[in-house]
Image: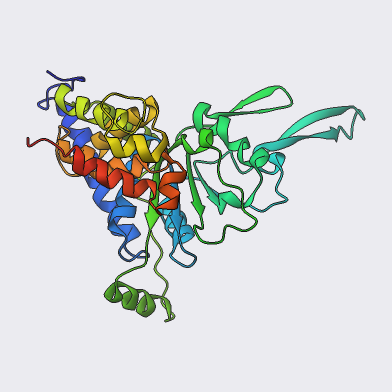
Length: 341
């Protein structure tokens, strides 16, 4: 049994769409690699977010190329890119746009005119998103979920595809505003960007300290990306694999009968139903990116931590023992390993 169906692969149209997906996937990696060295897992997760139509929160130390990665991806995709540098004095209207009064020189009549903000883009980089107060952070909520924004009672539609790729610094917590749980839940992934190995770091130094400049070329467009998002949703997943994804998510909730004792001890709140939806969708994209037309248990297990780490809230017992949500999820995956195919 399968929870979704896909038309016969003998279909010429479907075969052509699949071939184009694989070609674009390879071309994106090739173009990004002109600028970005290493970070294979991070690049894969950002691309999965792209093919799923989700948003990605990138957490990493300063100087680890978070902003450069997002800008390079936007150039490679051929999409409209906007960047917002979040600061404590940033206002919601600085993101969404605002109404201004304009006067007609001929008639002298004054009218309200809406001036769009940077949120009206295909790829929006929310740089250092935790630097601004919750009032401004919440300006993104409607856009991330509903693909629209409301200004003075008027609803304005944001054209798809629309991706929010937000960055945050995990060490400088003074003067920052932790993201509300409701906004964290809108992100498909919380991707951790770590330091590079020595060999990759040497390659970065060699690439960036000369006069040569590598410029990525666009390899696709907005219409194709929307088509790829539909294609990903057509990938079939067996009932047993989908059940494993649901079991993992439910096991993060302390009140659930299936949750292990360490979850009941260390976790205050577990992941929502949205987590299970995102886990299955991202696993479908990962399978297709790896030239498979079905989802495996390994796809679910490989993406579980990135999907769940920002949705599992630990309590004071975990904090006193210096256990993070990642530590809890690692133990959970060990307690509930993926069944053998």
